[in-house]
Length: 366
Image 1 (cartoon, rainbow, N blue to C red):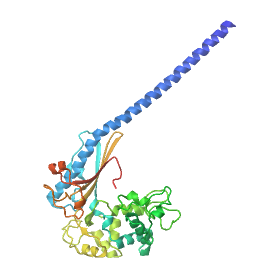
Image 2: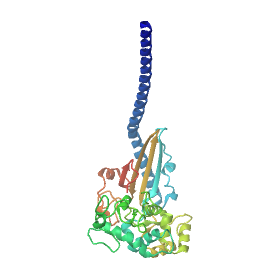
Image 3: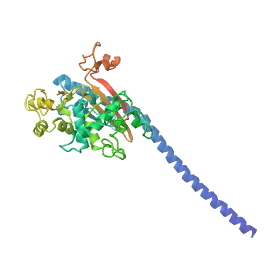
Image 4: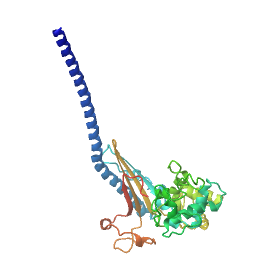
């Protein structure tokens, strides 16, 4: 019996040892997989340094193509000139064949700065948005949104008839105060009365952001029509379909003409080159917004990828190089005095654009 018990004990120990070996083997394999995955993850960030070089190279390609068209044709009207696809036009490819890159150019001068939009036009736009795009709307429906926006920006505590000051926002959870300065980005509208959804005022809220926090169609239309960077006139050639419809007001025949293209002075080109075109003269009489036919401000969105590593670069480029300093073009923009001086290195390199904003790996710059 003693020998049998000893044999069973030895067998049990052997089974335990074998089970322990299997467990440790599985654990080691798991740890190895985690380590390999971690190394891959870390290597992606090291690889981003290489992708950053490609991203800024692509940005220079975009700037070079824009400048080439500007030098040869004198003006940049709209992407159909050829500058809308800088990589295709230049024929430049990444030195590393495993790198994939893309450039998206947006004419930022084809959008209106909110400060340049007359009150009556903003009120009218908000009324139409509130009415869901109906042609016949009550203009008074736009007043609550305009008043709340203006109260948000002004420095006083005098509440407009349908606006909101600090005493309204102090009741929020968490409470906050009006900044008393101009709106700086689109996300700021989430904080302003009426633009985000308020269950206590469902009729006059949720204009830009729905109950679940997502952007509404009206917010997307607003983004396509407004820019916090364009201080100059509106380039009619690149405006969104929504903005074209709004600019034409109730004049359906003019809208059809604008969508068709220029009537004279542009040859066979499908874009406007002459502000004296009857369509544009009629358009400017409807809204109090100054027009131009030239693109002067560009949003450049660069995407670079290699394997699972990605790098994104967003920049705003302006043809307005400032005023007063040697080697710089004269700035005819009224906001020139507010601009910071150009980087001396860019001046020395005679870089053809002023960089108004630049962000790495961020989706939003406004």
